[in-house]
Length: 213
Image 1 (cartoon, rainbow, N blue to C red):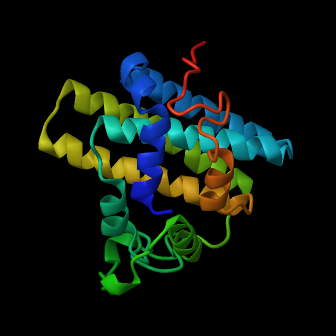
Image 2 (tube, helix red, strand yellow; image 1 turned 135 degrees about the vertical axis):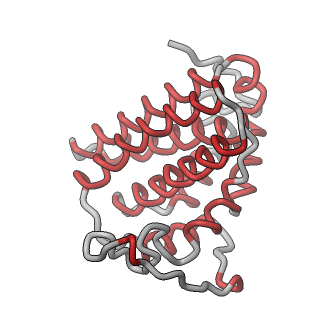
């Protein structure tokens, strides 16, 4: 399953209700809610529910990306092509070097990941060793920044703000891969398993849950 196929699956199941029922604030809230649930479930060793909450957070997030027409695969390759975008190294060496002295490195386009599993493995090579406290801290900080940049672009919709928004949304998408690596789950296989019969709750395509709280 490619990233574009993941997005098409999301739109096929949830596109109609996402567009009709939920504002940008709603989509942000639900994605953040399920990500915080993932953190809580993981810390309490409830891995089965943690996987479900992580996928739910991802699907709410994809709805946001679609709302703003962000080509997340293009942005991922632009910033994370076999390197950390900050230290430009693989594995990441941000803690050990002065990132102001980083040097650009070329990455052959032929190595571009072909599917979600390939992307997940590439991110693992960039960020190979992480513990739950590290991931939790990164997620919470990124969620806070993400909310700001979405609202900032809505208030001031210009090219500069949209460029920054795309960069921040890419950082957060990478954290999904890191989170799946943390719990040793193949993102692609988990998505196929959860959505083989449509929505994982109502088992319909399109979804008829009309979820709210």
